[in-house]
Every structure is written in C-alpha cells, then in structure tokens.
Figure 1 (cartoon, rainbow over the protein chains, first blue to last red):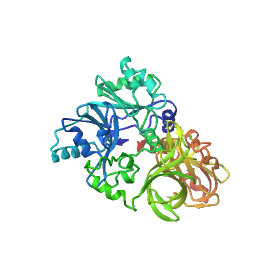
Figure 2 (cartoon, rainbow over the protein chains, first blue to last red):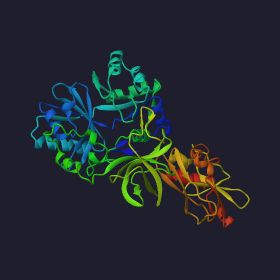
Figure 3 (cartoon, rainbow over the protein chains, first blue to last red):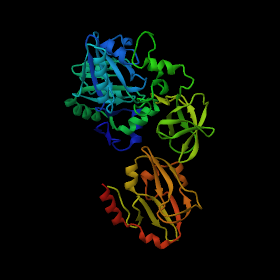
Amino acid sequence: MPFGGWDMPLHYGSQLEEHDTVREHAGVFDVSHMCPVDVEGPDAQAFLRRLLANDVAKLKTVGQALYSCLLNDSGGVVDDLIVYLRGPSGHYRLVVNAGTADKDLTWLETQRWRGSFDVTIRRRTDLAMLAIQGPQARELTATCLPREMAESALELAPFHAVECGGWFIARTGYTGEDGFEMLLPADHVVDLWSVLLDAGVRPCGLGARDTLRLEAGMNLYGQDMGEDVGPLESGLAWTVAWEPADRDFIGRTALEELRTSPERREFVGLLLTGRGVLRAHQTVLSNGREVGEITSGGFAPTLQRSIALARVAPGLGETCEVEMRGKPVAARIVKPPFVRQGRILVEL
Amino acid sequence: MSTLPADLKYTATHEWVRDNGDGTVTVGITDHAQAALGDIVFVEVPESGRSVAAEDACAVVESVKAASDIYAPLAGEIIAGNATLADTPDAINTSPYADGWIFRLSPSDPAALATLLDATAYAQLVADES
C-alpha cells in the first residue's frame, strides 16, 4: 500500500501472526520511510530548545534519546519525533515521520532563518532503517552483528543509542516491546535484513506495527494528533518540558492558555465491552450525548478485544458508548497503555 | 491461488451461494474475498426471520483492516446465521466455503439462483479486477 510516498507491505502473510511474533519472539520492520535529519552547528542546542516542546538540555550523555513534539505557533503538532544527542558539542539526529518530512524540513529551515541560528540541517536519504522488536529482538540482532558492535548494542540502556562505523543502533521502538531501531547505509540494509531473517527474526508489516503501537498506547501522527490538536489533548503532556519557565519554545504561549482551560479535552483509552470493532472517527457517546471521537481503533490481538484511543470531553467517568453503524455499543474508559512488554495492563 | 468450487454460484460482490436442494441456499464470502480482507476478527450475522431484498447489506465482516458489508445475493428470508462465528470469526479465513458460512436464506424466487455468476464467470471477474 502507498504510505507517505513509499510503497509498504501491510503484512507478509498474516498480520495477527506478525503481531504475536513481536509480543512473544522477535520481528523486523523495514521502516526506511522514517526520515533521519542531522542538525549540527554551534547553535544546534539553542535551535532545538526553541523548536521542540521537550527540552534537549535534558540530554546529558552522548547517545541519549528524547521523544518530543515539534509545535507550530498555535501549539498544534507539526510532527512528533525522536531526537538523539550524537556528540558533546551540538550534534543531534532527529528521526521524523515519512509523510511529514518535507513539511518538517521547510519548517526547520524557516525557523533557522527567522532566528538566525548557526546550524546546518541535513536530511539523510542515504540511510535505511530497520526496527527489530520483541523480547528476543536484542539477542537475535546481536548474533547478526560484528562482535564489537554487538557488545556495544547489548550494553545500551533503554532510550540510548550507539554509533559504530556509519551504523546507528538505538534501543527504541514503537511496539511496547524491547528491541532496536537501526539506521545504516542503504546499500547494507538488504544484507542485514536477510541475516536477521536467517537468525529467526520474522518480517512484519505496517498492519502489525499499527496494532502493536495501539496496544502500547503510542500515538500516530496525523491520526491521534496533528496541526490542529496539540500534545495536551493527545496524551502527550508528559513530553512538554515546562521548566525552565523562561525557555521560550514555539507554541508555549498557546499551550499555557490551554493548560488551565476547563474545556481541555482528555485523551483516553477505550476497551469495547459490547460487540464489534472500534475504528477511527467513530463518535463517543455518554448518556446518548456526543462527547468525543475515536482517533485510533482496532482489534487488539494481545487482548483479543477491540480497543481505541479517543479524545473526549473532561470528566466522563468509567464507561461510555461508541456509535457503530447507528447503534450505541458499550465501552469502558481506561488509561493507556493497554500492553507493555507482553503484559496486559488493563483489566479485561 | 484461491480455490473456486465449481458447484457454487457467485456474486460480483464476492459472496458464494450454495443451493442446498431443499429450497434454501447457504451464503459466505469467497476465498479471494477473505484473502483480500486479511485476518477476520468480528462477524455480525443477520437474525433469522429477517426479510431481505437482493443486494441488501445484511451482515458485516470486520478484518484487522476494515469493516465490509456482506450482501444478500437473492431476495428472501434469512433462516439462520452462523452463530459459531461469534467465537471463531477466523473460520472465514481458514474455511471460507464450509465452516465459514455466514447465513442461510430461503429465496422468494428459487429460479433467480440461475441468474448468479458461475465459477468461470466469477473467476473472470476477479481476473478483470486485478
């Protein structure tokens, strides 16, 4: 299927089997559509502290990673990304979404110019990316790497990365399981892919990637948040660094207004108790009244139930209904994530 | 390659129809349709006694990807829905022409069965679609 200008496999056979593989064993996703962007220069830190809602000053050691939103002036989300500190003197790498990469680059360049920041912004189209995820992912990946690289990779703490010769290995992911995300020269990726498959890692497509991230309560850009809905109404308040109070990041003024607003909508998880499948854009009802909308929904293979993420009016309580084909169907309101590290975290 | 039993009739919307020889027909979706939908996780079958017109949406099959309506191939009365699909919706994936049947129908005009596609015509339709 077409995805952000890329032709991507939805599955390699069975989406459900691929999902289970990642929860129980190890799967590999070709995520080369994700776009690495290197930001370097004397002003790199100041630039990113202005651009990102999270604070890159939190990154103390080389290799450390941070999840953040890139906001517009009205506090909406231009994109969500992971930023890695690559060198002590202002070397950063961002990994942004495929569908938003062009827009992000334009936004970064505009802001660089507007603030006269001394930075270079370089899109790394020469790099491919694989995500190897699952309880056995790290060990199996290590067997596919040269010894020194394997040792460094296995020593990584969560949300840290290491670089060996042009390979960039991060202990991050989008599935709720342990594993690596690896950036490497595009001409090496087919070899690595085959070696991983030989080692018993199974190929997984976009379909499983979506159900895994949904169970893990992780947002999908353009669906759960976007230019018109900011982090405070999409479950990402934890990624906004309010302190220090004098850090004037783009979108801050708008977020501060919304922060104290009684109308601020909540971002919740839904667990379907009636029959059917929750889907994006279905209407959430409370006592027959429209109170919100599902932003992501589907069948959760690990729970064998249908779940969703939804944006709803504040103060709903523990239950609601979702309108499906004109009829209200009962659901419970829960706090995401639904699953982490193979464990179900919500009461079924 | 999907299998296509020669003794069944087919619709352009990918249902198969089996003549039970007693004035009733059994309806399901083809192997081609289940493969296109992907893993099926929920099925809503019609209630017995419901009257349907030909091409009425009367059941829903939800896969990991999306919800799809299933249409009545002929006008008539629903006489049974496959209740076992509530617990094993994936029977449509694994056994589309047997365990994965969706409903039984008593057509108001049994002769209308002859107007549906035969296996050769349906195979051609699938080939033309792809």
